[in-house]
Image (cartoon, rainbow, N blue to C red):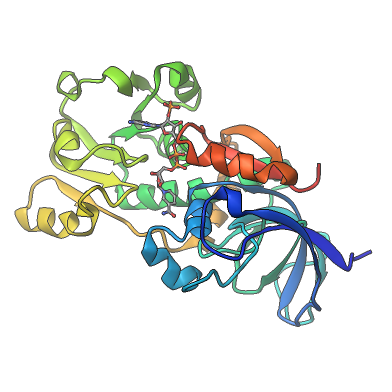
Length: 324
Ligand SMILES: NC(=O)c1ccc[n+]([C@@H]2O[C@H](COP(=O)([O-])OP(=O)(O)OC[C@H]3O[C@@H](n4cnc5c(N)ncnc54)[C@H](OP(=O)(O)O)[C@@H]3O)[C@@H](O)[C@H]2O)c1
């Protein structure tokens, strides 16, 4: 039975987690090119933070100006197709699926209507909904950096505990790199168990003491800079960061460093979501990744989940369980 109403997490304006409310909203009729998904799990991640707050401001060109285009929050999902329009191709009712749209999707809700142009794949049979949801946003960013890294022999990943960092450790290991990674002292065992060969406590790490033969330095939490990374990179090594930096240097350093023909900065824009999540499904099926999940929240606890994500202290992925 398809319900007439469903619960969703929504807001009217950009703002902090306190602006979120849970409401039962009516289900409008499905269009021919849409499918209806009963959402089982989503994550509360950094892209959701951008969609919630409309920050950085440039985000609003995609998510709506001056107010959000989509009131219901959520950018990723795992769930089951329970209805489909006659022109929705490639999936059937009963399929277990996962998908992601970084401009906002409205997936922090019990039901979700997806258009045929949303990046989506079937979930491998052995993978549960929580693991599937936790293999989307962070994996997409990490896989984008992997593609830009040109199969490094040796990589340093700063911030191995984040959604991006934890996926990056596993992707680079699965592809044969020697991985060094950093975390806070209490999570060193955690990043080791993700596969890092060498682990370092970022609180007292002196990069001068490390060897200077790294092919790639990935700052997956955007806390350092090119000057620090250069100390351990080979002459033509690559530095990448997940953040723009305090002077928005990620926008111009890639061009400047390329002109100088030495160590370079790359700032890859994560674009091909369909390719990333197809790869995530394969990696999950082959046991190459085991997404890091710190904690699961219910829909009623969503404000707390956003506050936790924004605290900068979450590790891996925070799950929102829509079918407790
Ligand atoms: N604009 C966007 O749409 C977007 C999307 C995705 C990601 N990003 C950016 O990408 C970055 C990573 O996001 P994420 O979700 O993977 O992770 P995250 O939530 O930012 O990472 C949290 C972890 O970072 C670690 N950390 C904190 N300070 C650190 C430091 N100085 N050095 C190394 N690690 C440190 C902490 O590890 P310990 O607990 O071990 O201390 C913490 O557990 C964020 O800066 C985010 O803004 C932006």
